[in-house]
Image (cartoon, rainbow, N blue to C red; front, side):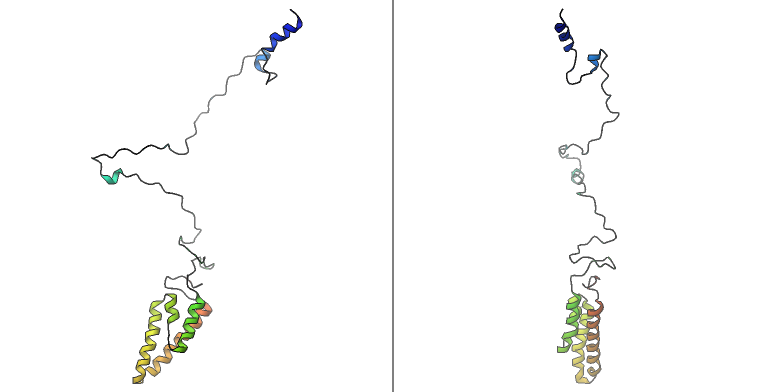
Length: 180
């Protein structure tokens, strides 16, 4: 045999991708890696078609129980209510959809033309607004009996001071939210 033929015999034993494979070195091949000790659980259960209704099972027990669509989002102390105008930074409660400027101006300016309590009615404080509105008209009626001379200025002053307080410090609407 020539030297070239002898080299071709060993070429079949060598793996060209790995120059020093176990077969080329004359060693036995290592055992393959053992399978993992556990198999990972599937993330979701496979879908199975619903069972056919049974005539002996009540209908309410045949309905599938729906899973929650999503996990609840943490609110970090804020109530889970819609707040289109944001949250009050001091209390963390949502702002009202009513404006304290509008409520204060209605409460302050309309008594000049003889209509009291409209700012409170706008803000949603129905009881205070009706007492001021109806009290002013009832006092105007009592002017005929001279008792209204004390009632009308009292309610008028109450309404004007209430308007100033609404403009300066704000207030709460009928739902208990602070006026924005």
